Length: 107
Image 1 (cartoon, rainbow, N blue to C red):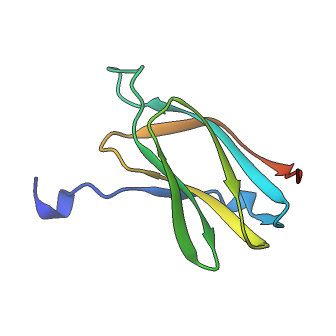
Image 2 (cartoon, rainbow, N blue to C red; image 1 turned 45 degrees about the horizontal axis):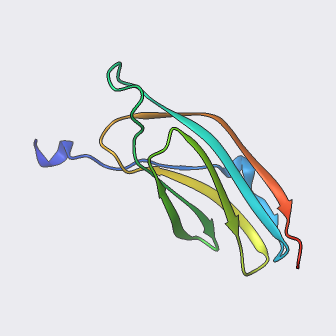
């Protein structure tokens, strides 16, 4: 493969879903993924999931599940962008995504 055609991961930042969270709040990211190719539809691609805060990306989890339910808990209050990056060589479609805010109860 020529160098100029080398695979480059794509990062998706969910900017519409900027969330201000406090230390007593968790964000729940739910989504499903589909492969673009017609073969191996039951096999999911590899995605990295994380967040952006103050211009810095923190990758928190790698997933290769078709259905995903990922919870983020933060130590500091602030504005957070959730982001997803395709880490596989195949194209992936993310469907049925949502971000929910949940209050953390102290025990």
